[in-house]
Image (spheres, helix red, strand yellow):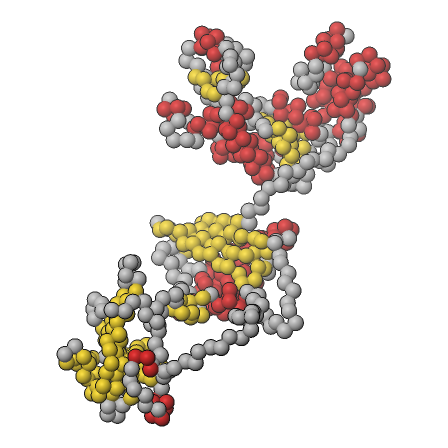
Amino acid sequence: MAAMKQSLPQSEADGISTRMLAVLWVPRFRLQAVLLNQASNPGSNLEAHGRAPSPALHGTVALVDGSSVRGLLLEATLCAERLGVAAGMAPAQALARCPQLELAVASETSEEWLAGRLLHFAGTLSPRVERQAPNRCLLDLRGLGIRDWNLWAQEALERLRHEFGMEAALGVAPQAGLAWCAARRAFPVRVVDAPEVFIEELTFAELEVSSTLQQQLEGWGVYTLGELLRLPKQGALERLGPEAAPLWELARDTRECVLRLESFPEVLQLSQDLEHPVQTLAPVIFILNRMIEQLASRMRLLHRVAAVLELKLFLENAPPYERHFGLPTPSREEAVMLRVLETHLEALTLEAALVGVSLKIREVLPSSQQLALFENPLRDPNRFGETLARLEALAGENRMGIPVPAHTHRPGAFHLLDPSKVFGAPPEPKRSPHPAGPQPTEPQHGLPLRRFRPALEALVHLKQHRPVRIHAGNISGAVLDCYGPYRLSGTWWEAGAWRREEWDIHLGGGAGGLYRLACEHGPPQVWTLEGCYDAHQWAVRRPPVSRTTFTSEPHDAHQ
């Protein structure tokens, strides 16, 4: 033992290391993959027998190789092994020893599924993870601030068993090779505080030494790694060959282990439960401010910017409230993101008390845009977006935007465009509508119609189905002349079908002039005064009152 201490570096001889590595290992991995995958599916055989999916290795179950003609056993649970079942047996032989044995067929899909979950869990323990095998991960624990390795490892395995139902082992040591050996010796945790003592106890079977070398060492009376290291290295290697060199490297290698790190998708999401239900949103803004600061710092490390904020408020005895906020310009500035959320929360009224908050950010790569010489972009797009959010809070949801005529022939129909997308989008290059050159356009005929916004509801007196007198607010009088009806209809194939009649009327009296009168066939039937034709042009030029004289919208249908 004294010779062993002299052969090791002083830091290892004292049991002190500035870097600790851990190996997370899942024994009976292929069997656990099948059992857990079956237990996660409703109506599986395991549920029919009343067994819980966690832990997975309870009961007498064995795994059969479905790709082989003979179908030998690959793995078995500990209970089955105690009854005489072992890997390599034929199913008939195993059932003869254990009649209550259940057989499961190996599945590559289940193994890939469980390997992904194991890697995901390893990423929650350390940001530096190397996948050495589907059932084994190497973790770099440097800089995690762990004081009690045993307590940390036990809590990690308990969480793995509770969340995923996996039975695993965890070995912690200053070197990767020792951590792997510790994981195989773990029940279920093994922390190597004194490497020299641990190396002294390692057998060659644990080190996966070939049977030929192991027999040769046993012929020398050497059964452990500690006994081998007491021999002269040069003479032993000359007799054993280069196959024994890794055994010395395992014990005396002081080089820093370089990991082939796995890349994990970063989920920018934070949640917090409130200790007591709250009725006001002031505490929520304080919590969101802290969440945004943390998420913004993570985005700076990832060189990402926020494009969409996903807010979720958990209510007491009520479904959660969810809302997504798109930033006009992707940003990671805390003030910008907080203003977007705060503007919406100021006018928000919840139906129940608040018990939790969740904030998720959908991030994108920052983009740069080269502006043209005469382009005039928004000075502050995010400030403009904040102004739009305040206007929407005052006017109501989906009641603010840029009106655009709808793709229909219904007069006055329109929809609203999001101003942030219109003003924030790069301008399209101007192109001539006629590349071959300007084409002559037909001059427009008719009088301009000045519409009333909104249209005036009218009381109409009819005689022989024609208007003879109207009353619409301050506009009333007898109808001197009328032309119509001009019938329009549209979207008759949908639930929102519409049908209307239009009249061009000439009123006398103080409100004399040319007007457009419309009747919406309901139910109910509603008469409205849509607008008046330009009075100045009507006074100067009085063309015959005909349908082709006045401007109006195209028709969906004519009857």
